Image 1: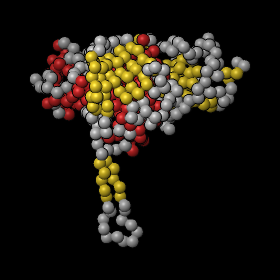
Image 2 (image 1 turned 60 degrees about the vertical axis):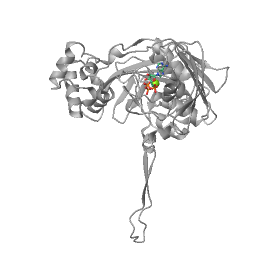
Image 3 (image 1 turned 180 degrees about the vertical axis):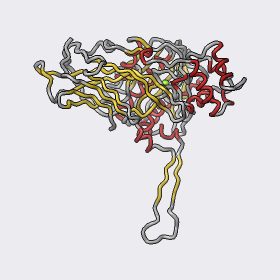
Image 4 (image 1 turned 45 degrees about the horizontal axis):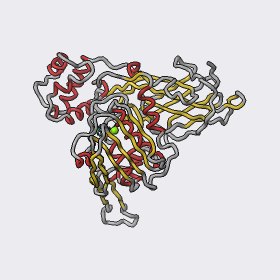
Length: 442
Ligand SMILES: Nc1ncnc2c1ncn2[C@@H]1O[C@H](COP(=O)(O)OP(=O)(O)OP(=O)(O)O)[C@@H](O)[C@H]1O
Ligand SMILES: [Mg+2]
């Protein structure tokens, strides 16, 4: 093993929390390992900033500036003018509902936090994540070799409900809904994935067919935010298969399946966290939201689902928080915070090592250098803050010429955070005697 990316090779991550992760040969973290001589180049790239939790649990990545622009209301002031106008400023308030942002390519970019050129791969990744979340084997690919039509299928349990209810699930005008509200470190759970899928079909006048539990359901997302059932056919089928066609309004992407490929490779590589959701992964507000989302179920049953809080401990936690028999949706913020603190007294934080990782051989098709860094990020707005463990893994491919590292060598990088593809890209450059990768803002 030689380290020929020059000494001091580093990967730097900065975010608006001031956190910085440096993978550096001069530190104790593993060096990039030159597994063979790299041959391929694909110059990266863009930018990434960690601004908080990514879809519920991962300390990642959202395009905050774009999201800010996407506020659900907008005021336009004409101002009072310079001539001593007696009229007050003409303030107009335009309102639009959140779901309307899923209707256009611009809005989707804002909602999804990726540029239009990445939307196809993001949509396929969302479908792939859902398929992988079932824990079953998944398949994906192009339909009839088309550059615009893809399928993703899993052998999981299939989708509950009538065809109309399934259409609702694939509609942009529905509350964020998820069966995965208990936060896990490897993915989020906002229940937003399928809204992005439906939005992409609507915005590009594409097509959507869902086959599950012996029904083939042709769906059509509509501008009113609902998705219509166009046709239902009886077929023999287990699990869930989604066929999606993108229209030209969503730019073609030569590598549309790259993120779902990586997600599928990561799902079977290395080791992943197999524990329960930890009370350390929610701040006071998120913990309260979690309880509200669980409706009329007893508080105890939800607490008992959490890491370190099972069995008799759940009762002790509820007693320590001064709560009796209450339903999840009856508790107020203060009570939720008391519960959270009491749960944390019983549980121990999950150390980043328990998250496992994909490992240096995770992407065996490529000749890549590998580095890993672990840590814990504090996030959230209501105390106590969430303490989210993370494992950042990076694979870098680098061109060399005659065995020498060249100043303008292109670097290809894959960045996975908690075993999930970072949905943005890296900037790579050579900085004096170092090669560096940095996440930053486009
Ligand atoms: N292939 C599938 N098999 C079984 N259930 C599915 C499948 N795809 C989606 N679902 C169900 O639909 C729900 C909504 O999916 P969606 O992708 O919108 O949200 P999520 O996966 O829960 O969260 P997010 O995508 O924001 O991380 C899921 O929580 C799950 O219950
Ligand atoms: Mg999803």
